[in-house]
Amino acid sequence: MQKLSAEELLAQYAEGKRNFNAVDLSEDNLFQANLAEINLSGSILRRAYLPYGNLTEANLYKTDLQDAELGDIQLYQANLSEANLSEQIYPEQICATPICKVPICRKLICKVRICTMQI
Image (cartoon, rainbow, N blue to C red; front, side, top):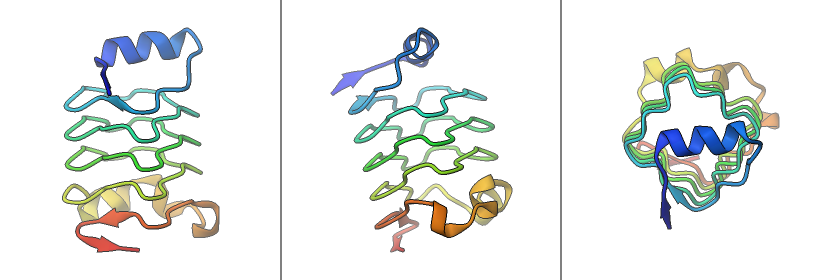
């Protein structure tokens, strides 16, 4: 798995690259990052800092987001199937995040782990 810095990711994304599957972005600062339609499937974003980011239509299949900061992030139509969100989502984060405002039928959230519970 390739370790990528936030700067490297943002530079490659700005050049048009969208496929970043199986990369390690642990503890990276991606505050307000606009990463719509990015593919981060199988990636590690443990303790990543992503508030106010845009992950609209992102592929987060099997992505490890454990302890990531996701306050006010946009996840409209993101694929969160089998993503690990445990130990990082608190009620105030969920309620401030647009994921609450999206009809559940448009979300891919099968087998998502949230705070040691599966939905």
